Image 1: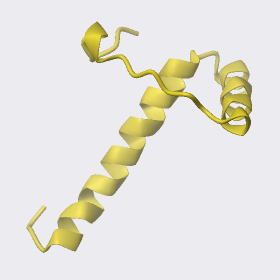
Image 2: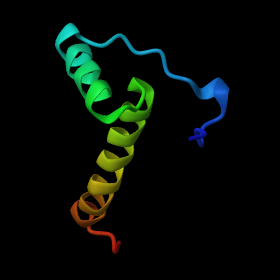
Image 3: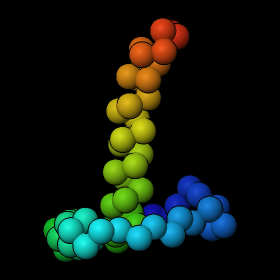
Length: 61
C-alpha cells in the first residue's frame, strides 16, 4: 500500500514504551507495519472526530 503523504512529510515521533509494545502486538496480529497501523488510527480518529467538531462549532457539517 502506497502512502498518500509526500515522503518529506514523514513524522518522527518518540513513543512511550507501553505504546510501542501495543503497536508491536498489533503488528504481529495484523501483519501491517507499525507506520500503517498509526496512519490507520490517525485517519480513523480524524474521521470520527470531524463530525463532532462541526457539531460543537455550531457550523453545519
